[in-house]
Amino acid sequence: KDNGKSEVKYVLLNGTLGQTSTTNRTLSFEKGMADAGITATLVGEALACDFDRAKAMDKFTPMIGTSEFDAVVSNNDAMALGVVEALESKGIDPSSLPILGIDASKDGRVAIKDGKLAMSVFQDPRGQGKGALYAALNLANGEDIAKDSGFEKDETGFILWVPFEPVTAENVAEYDN
Image (cartoon, rainbow, N blue to C red):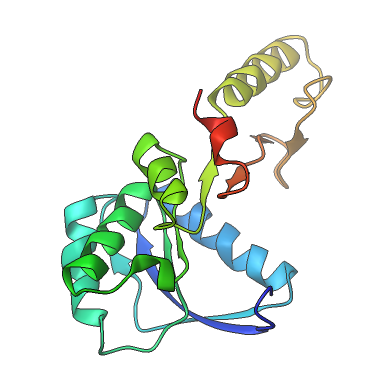
């Protein structure tokens, strides 16, 4: 949107196929783009990389110079960093292409600071723990799962959603501790 685009072509690096986190991370990206009014078109097939950096590098490398895309979306930081390595091995500056990861891992945060990753997403483990405790207590007491938790339920009413937090160059330092 900052570049005035309403359509984006992207390469997707999937985690383990069939795993809930792989499916949900992909669907959340697609929903976020749609909610922002951006038509996101997948280039080719998603690359199944099993959350592995080396597999991501191996599977992404053949796309360099043979496919046209605007961004790379990875289901975790390790695969996003595999894309960075693939680009660098071909003499391409990774900052020339938005590369997105998930997890806000230590290496991912360093890559954001270095301008190699455009962003990552933080999953709050303390928030997840808090949500699990509220859910357990509420269910044990016959209450609504979300009562007093501060989190929202999914459409089934049995899952609390702890919001993911975007991590960019502007706020990455906040996630270092």
